[in-house]
Length: 579
Image 1 (tube, rainbow, N blue to C red):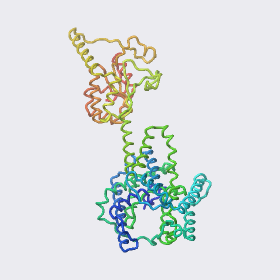
Image 2 (spheres, one colour):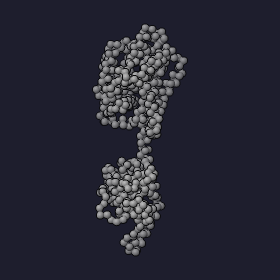
Image 3 (cartoon, rainbow, N blue to C red):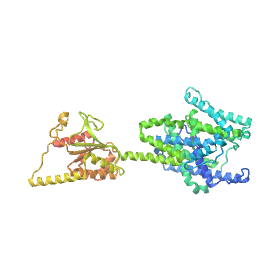
């Protein structure tokens, strides 16, 4: 099903250890194993059928949820899985898989742990039972690792020279099965083997529909974890090999896979860390590789399944662990991530620690929430800069970063590096007020002075008052910046909106309020580089009733020319304006 509908060329679907543990926990809650359990009794078959029914119901409900998400086009949710989250999540999940395989590698028979701190609980149980380690299984694990690790390293380093990668996993399975069979290791040393594999294609069987209400909550968590793992792996290998995936199509592919397979006694499936890495290292390039792996599994089910009866589980555990090498190597990205972005480094570390310490589903949720919080903090704490003019150009740059840019006399040019919305309006106002000196005391004093001046003008019947202004000719830097008549007080404020990507109602009202306050102290407000959406919201909010429409310009330089020319004399032709 995934081969037909999926978009991940290197994704191998199947059983993922974490999803398997979560499913097993649900099954154990609804159909617990009795204390006095006889595996050979007739009750065992009924119990097994009930457990299979519950597991199949989880798969069916998970598939239905994914199909509903596809219908609602919720694949965009994967955009919140940033690159640091994806790599940290898959790396931490690899740790869970590795720890879950330790008991098989050491020959320990331990109960499984689920929920928060399950990884540490499992490690504690392993440490407590080290004295019960089966030395034969430990030896098998050591030999397997000693062969698998170097051979896989050779496959990785010389993959372009080798016509086909060395099939070390298949060889290891065949050799281990033969050695166990001819040496009777299972009976002589109590080695845990795979055991009986039912031959034949599984017969269609209805899941336990009546369990849906009881499994709904856990199934939602299983669905999101399975989808997150699948999309994360698909994204990692898509980036590595230069192609793209479609998150909505991935929902459809995994939804159909789980829905169809649930009627054949299957439990939830997803992309798997180990087999996906094996598939990629073996040279798979398209979804057709899924067809051939499915055919191999089919042949095992129909024909050669019983031949793997004597395969030691320790060998399978070693193959799983060594296949996670690529996930563990993602730690090498941390130094570069620290150098590029400290916040992204924090997202990586927080996600990894949350998944490892707590659990996969809860840790993933914490990682996504923390990543979103960093985005919100970045927009809330955006910088407000004063722009200066680079002489003999039309370029304006932040003065704190460019020493050769000069402030235009009497004009304060400001730029805000972020959106203006309800979440950061107070920070925006605080930064702008600090730069402009818009304190309540100054506003009141300037307003009183303005009223007093108007009163004297009316009494003296003076039509206008001439004020000394700076020479605004751009022909000479000295004439422009060293005019003896220049004033230190700000007479005009020009806001460069080129980096303001959006404004909401609260931000638009703040613009109107600041425009009113500036007018009270005799300062005119101008806008430049507004995108259409920002300008539409500002206009609809009533800003134009407090501001001259001719004070909105296409570029900062047009606005500066207009301001300077207005202070000298009326213009016959204005620069380009938006009315």
